[in-house]
Length: 358
Ligand SMILES: *Cc1c(COP(=O)(O)O)cnc(C)c1O
Image (tube, rainbow, N blue to C red; front, side):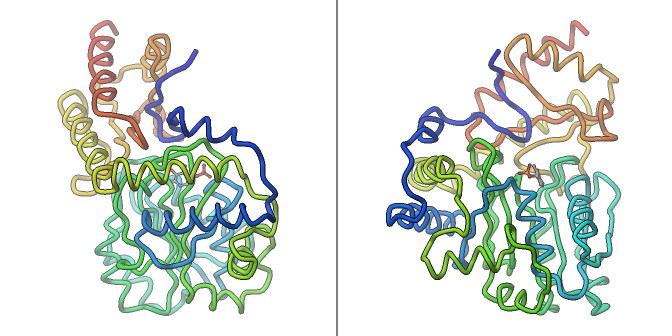
C-alpha cells in the first residue's frame, strides 16, 4: 500500500517528475545529451548559489562523498562529525586508505566553529568535512560561523555533505567558500534515488592533481574532464531518466515555486513540528541548531515508535524511527521536497489521535 512519506528520503515525487523518468532514451554521446546536462548544470548552479562547475554521478550521495574525500586528500583529512552521516565520511576515508582524523561532537550537539579553528590551526590537514544537515540527530550545523573561521585557512579544502538539505535550505556555496558541496536526488530536491550532484571549486580540481590513486568512477577530476572537454558529458553512461526528471523538477523549483518560497515552506513546517514536539515530547537537537528539513524527537513518553509507525502505515503514512542506537529512544519526522504544510498538520493530528489509544 502507498504511504505518504515523512521520512528523510526517499521522498514522495511529484507525478509529472515520475512521468519524466519514463522519457524515451537518447544517446548519451548525442548533442541532445549535452544540451540536457548543460541545462541541469546551469539550474543547479542557481540552487547551490555557485559559479563553480556542477558534476553529476550515477550513484547515491555516498558515492560523491567517497569520491571527493579520496580524490582531493593528498595529506590528511579531518572529519567533523555530529552523527551517523558525519561518521560515514570517516569510514569512507579509512576504507580508501585516506589518512583521517575523526572529531566527534556529542550527538544532538553541533560542530562548533572554535573546534574547527583549533584543528585547522595545527596545519596537519588539507581537507575538512562538515555535515550541513545531520539526518540522524536533526542538527543543522552553523555553516556561516564555520565559514568565518575557515577564512583563516583558505588553503584547506572544505567538503560539505548537504544531502538532506540542499533544495530545502539556503546554502550559498560561493559566499561560504565551500569547495565541494554534495547532495543527492531523493531528499529535499524531490526525485527518486539514484543520482548525486555536487559543485566543485577550480581550486579543488587543481589541488587534486597531486593525489595519487584517485580511483576512476568517482574521481572528481575525471568527471570534470568530461564535463569540460566533451562538453557536458560523462565518462560512463549516466542515468538519463534521472536527468530528464531533474531538469523538469529544477524548472519547478526555480520558476514555479521559487527558491526563497521553497526555503520558507521548509522553515515554516519545521517550526510547526518543533512546536508539536516540544508540547508532546522534547527535541533532540540543541536549540539554535535545528534542522529545517527534519526534526528528531526524543521519545520522552516511552511510546513504541515501531508500534506507532505500524499504525500510521495502516492509515497510509510513514515516519522514521531513530537512527542506529537512537532507535526507539527517538523518532524522526521529515518534511522534505514537496511535502506541504497541510499534509504535515494532517499527520500530526493523526499521531495525536493515535497516541491517545497507545
Ligand atoms: C541520506 C544521507 C546521506 C547518504 O546519501 P545517499 O544518497 O543515501 O548515499 C548522506 N548524508 C546525509 C546527511 C544524508 O541524509
